[in-house]
Image (tube, rainbow, N blue to C red; front, side):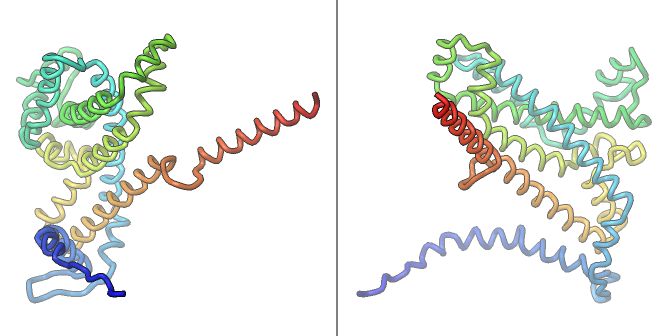
Length: 314
């Protein structure tokens, strides 16, 4: 029997993508990895230092503080934007011109460039002419340039305004994909609005919410332009997230080795955390026994055993 000849012409179609990825991702990452193990004094004078820069990054108090600020910011963003996006999406009309108008209005913040968002909120938060700053100053002193709490509040509010529409649009698309038969069955059973949300909509939105959580975590953990323009990382270091600190090391201090090691750790953390996050969220959907599946199986076995015991006693 003649062996089937392989057709390798399909690789020619993939080759342009491989070349683009190599020049835009693989080669820059390899270059950064090369810098992370060398102390560069000049293009021709370099000293191999091994993992010294990685040890410095792992024990640097400034980087650890920035890491904690990043985690705190991401946690606050997720706790606010996910519930708020679900709430707004459930209020939006599903049909007619009102639905189209609502989609356009909700999507407006998403089409504004990041640097424009930062400039807009910087003006908005000014205590002398900004609408937000002047309004809050009517009740209490508000100054993002001197008060860390005010700067942090403004940074969180800016991100919520800018990116909650993304969560809203994702959830809205998920709601539109739920068949009407589920709502009709809930109506026949006289289910309350909360029961409809809890037992009909929320399970169907699980994949959508998983995507929203992953996207918003990665975006919020890599945020740079908006807080840099808004506060520059200040006052002091109160809003200095990891991306801002990395730019200071690489551009202002021109510490190539340390900033290269920092960027690799930064990149790997986002990848690993996103992978773990995705794995945990999709654990029940994977083949094989999971924790919840084992609990259900044990519960079913107890019910069968109890029924058998009652039957034997009767």
